Picture (cartoon, rainbow, N blue to C red):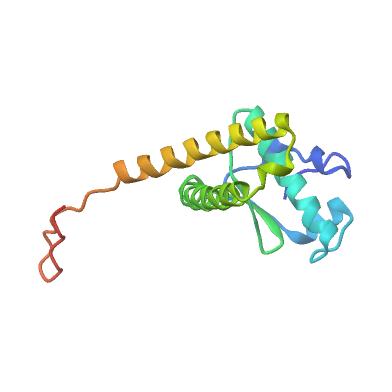
Length: 157
């Protein structure tokens, strides 16, 4: 269990945390003063997670933290690799949807300055999304010839 030097969430002793640790909801309820399954508890977890990630990174121990079963889990490197890739793809999808919504804005209702900034934002977002799609297409993993008997042969690209 992490050592707490005060009741303030940011004062958890980060030197004792390691990848793979799980901070239980019971401990977090006592630390934050909020009951789990409440909105205040959820917001406290977001804040605490960001604070711990920042503080661990500052001492040279970058780590990915995920809320799991109302507690916080410091992911191992293999878990973080999978989790961060999934999260990145999800956020890219969210960015695409936000870009579509931004395209639907009626620029006739904007001032000249707002319209200029809006068009610039559309340009930047479009460039980022286009680049991401191009890179994903360019670096697809190529199939390989399987040598295990009984398995279907991979299709050559």
